[in-house]
Image 1 (cartoon, rainbow, N blue to C red):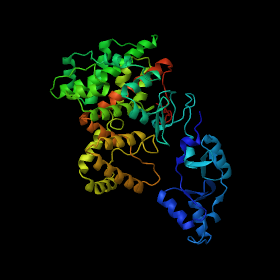
Image 2: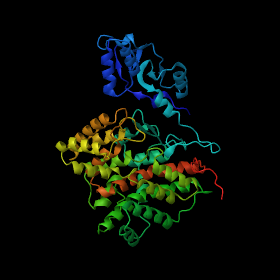
Image 3: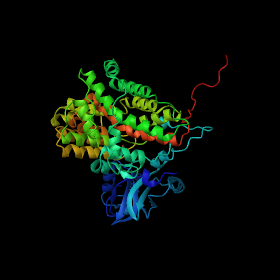
Image 4: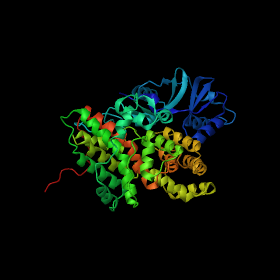
Amino acid sequence: MELRLGEVMTPDPLTAPPGTSLAEAAALMRERSVGSLVIVDGSNVVGIITERDCVRSTADGAHPTETKVEEWMTSSPVTMGTDTGITIALDQMMERHFRHIPVCNDGKLAGIVSFRQLVEAAKIRHVDPWAPGTGRGLENVTVAETQLSFIDGQQGRLIYRGYNAVELALKKHFIDVWHLLHYGDFPKDDSFAKKIAGMRESPLDVQTLKDLAQSHGTFMATLQAAIAACGAAWGLESWLERDPNEVEEEALRLGAVMPTLVATLWRLGQGLDPVEPDPNLDEATNYLWMMNGEKPTSDQVLAADRYLTLLAEHGMNASTFTGRVIASTGADVGSAVAGAAGALSGPLHGGAPALVLNMLDEIGTPERAEQWVKDAVRTGKRIMGFGHRVYKAEDPRAACFRDTSVELRSERVSLAKVVEAVVLEELRASKPGRALYTNVEFWSAVVLEHAGIPRPLCTPTFAVSRTIGWTAHILEQVRDNRLIRPSAEYTGPAEKRL
């Protein structure tokens, strides 16, 4: 399906009334680092003026402070609706030689789209194996259809099966969202929760887990090995030519045992005895109980439950794609989940929350934030927790975690707020034109710390949550499978002679 303007436009376009001077218009565009200004009379779009128009007016002798934009703007510009396809918009732009289109919704200005945005969006295409194109990192290449989640990167929304994920985090619990992602609705009673609670026990004996915990690999590598070992212990087999309901049960079992594996490996690695799962506790409470050996506070449970809910699913990210690729071969569910965990172990995907906490430690106090950030930008040091591959607006999960941190009066809130404000100001000044916002890792780090989760368990806890999304995607693949086999464009030398 073709993209619509509402999916690629820049919301909240820069506007000004007809009486604005050319100098004021140029200053507004320079301040926002944009190339056009929509002229509005009340709620009506009456014109548009660009940086090029301002330069042309000056070259023709127009006085910048005395000349009004209405004398140089394009009057009654072409506008299009949010549902207009990008191909139509591109055709109009090329035919009429303009570079910006105001986008309206029900007659009201909703955004603006540039020629550059449309060209980038037009790169989205289906890949024909007989005539392959390229999309580095598979960016903007659709590889599957899913009913699980929708990421609105332009508007900053995350949808789980039709429900706003932030609202789910505020009004539902992790177990409800688990049921929603796997079955499409909410549980009607506590039978699903009881079923999951009865699946939490690990099939691996303590000595096996102790040997894994005391190995020299990273924690995520150890967890990946434990997931694969569970699959072997359960005797999981290829899903091909099997009843999908059997595979569903295996997927639920993997989701239920993941918190047990993380908590047990952690405690054994610290020289502590494992804590058995408690079937009377909900998912978040039980996870913290097994990890720390003591009943968590209500604030800790709330923090953990919201984290688990908001990280459970996020479209075709690297680890989810990995899981679907493995599942598409007919491999067993345990192998697919273990592979997904391997992808999550990379710091570019799942390792940022712990690095955010390290950064906040290094900054130390709000007073040191501005100089630390300026030095980091000047020297090219990476600042963790900002920018996102998909979101061109604020990550809605970040906003929820910020509010949660304030609600719970987390001790990092004051420092984190100052650092966030300074970083955003500095990034926008040093990288004009780029949509850089706070991403989920920044504030989720504060929430995880408040929940009492040790720093080395930030990424493993991410895995505890995301296993629900992984397994839901794997089941989608199982029920409508085609082997995932993308093409590559050969860039090597032409045929050589021996």
